[in-house]
Image 1: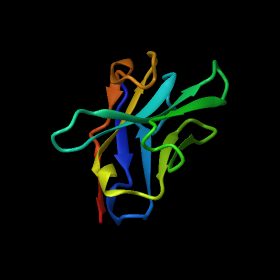
Image 2 (image 1 turned 135 degrees about the vertical axis):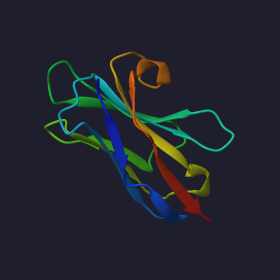
Image 3 (image 1 turned 30 degrees about the horizontal axis):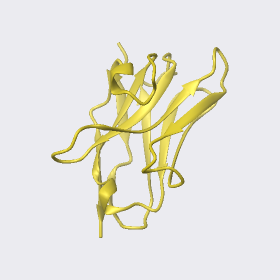
Image 4 (image 1 turned 45 degrees about the horizontal axis):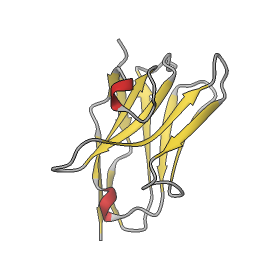
Amino acid sequence: QVQLVESGGGLVQAGGSLRLSCAASGRAFNTDSVGWFRQAPGKEREFVAAIRWIGGTRSYTTSYANSVKGRFTISTDAGKIMVHLQMNSLKPEDTAVYYCAAGSGLPISSDSSYAYWGQGTQVTVSS
């Protein structure tokens, strides 16, 4: 069982930045992918960004939703302990609960590809 813990959410003004982090029970992620999803009130959960490690290496590929490309950056450390989501130029429409997820399925943009989920962290962007 993998327990995921998100941190870094909060309230920020439009144009500001936040950095979300996801940890897996204090040890290295042992899944192929880690993704970030978000859910706004009254809306479906949607894909935000994901990383997928390449084979047994520390190299990885990334994928982003069109709505966040150029503003958000997903990254991880060499030890695969933490996955971060740097969010810049935030907009009110980015307001949502953000969830970290870990899994090994494909495609990495689908929430059904992830077996493990965090509790979520609230991000609120004021106009």
